[in-house]
Image 1 (cartoon, rainbow, N blue to C red):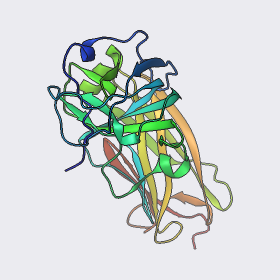
Image 2 (cartoon, rainbow, N blue to C red):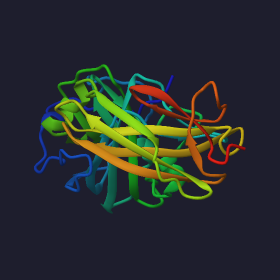
Image 3 (cartoon, rainbow, N blue to C red):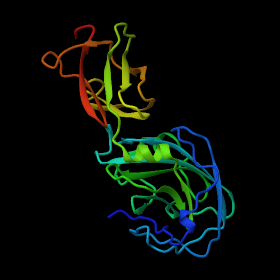
Length: 287
């Protein structure tokens, strides 16, 4: 069972709202500051809203919610992938402006009657962690935290927590945590004009719902460049009711043209939280 930081607190302190709630947009930069006194190390275990506080921290923090997304991209040796269905993710940026920085495990996210520890329960590597060495550590005193939350839980209270202090999410974020991911329409393929020694792919994603979301996807190549190769991970904000398009160039090999499964063994595989699709390709030279 995953460890969960014991950060719950009883009494009225947890019910108090902080001035200046976190921004509602995924990339909001709003911050809020709190102070609490430190008396001992945090325990790590499963907990509920009724568990009393055992840890306090004498620190000042700047806290900003970065984004909410339906999945995360993971990196393995020969592929990129996604976490299984049933989870959702919140990213925060935390900066300790005064005091001894807490350990990462001292933070938690209170949601649906439990407090969840930061991190993703997987043997893979988060692509963000692989590409950017700025995850929160006590030594740095600053960086991002990610919380893996159940996707099917409706909660009346949701907040980042440290000891007896909380930074509640705003109403927009709470709604996004409690409602299903909006439906997405995904179109992708090779562009008509292909560069030499590369494949140019185009992607168009439409958000059919009435709340913003993110398109989180993993793209792999099978017999395109090597037997099985990781190509790209995508994480694009798709506003409600809007369409977002972009191109991606996969370097290596000859120019490609669209093909069919019966005529070619080479294909790209695109996986996102709501589906999976293959794009079969062939060498433009016919060889």
